[in-house]
Amino acid sequence: MNISEKTVNHYTILSLQGILNASSAPTLRNYIAGLPEAQSLVIDLEKIEFLDSSGLGALVGIARKKKSSSAVMKLARMNDRVKKVFEITQAYTLFDIYDDVSAAAEA
Image 1 (cartoon, rainbow, N blue to C red):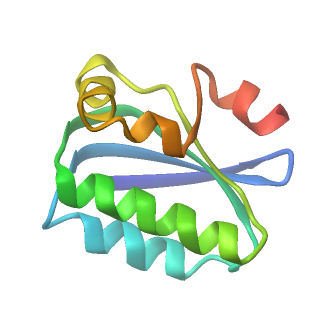
Image 2: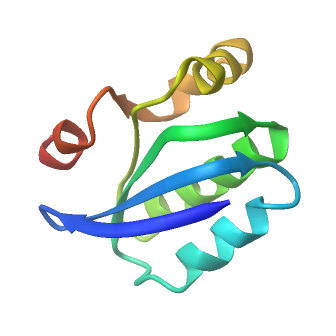
């Protein structure tokens, strides 16, 4: 999995590309651990080709850590494959999800 980073309106935007599963979830967690704890995030999921329960678990864990440090984590640009996982598991109820990265950073 590849991760690119930029900043918009005091949010760190992480664009993920590839597969988010048991083997790549630690990469995401380690990357985020290197960011300031109180830094709010928008995670762009448009280019995620596959998401499994480990990847979803990593996103939930990151969101909990951000919330405990009074930061925010939002998700943006879910493709149909990722949306399906969120719908099946009803995980969409746990996150603020946006169709656009800019809208997420401005909300």
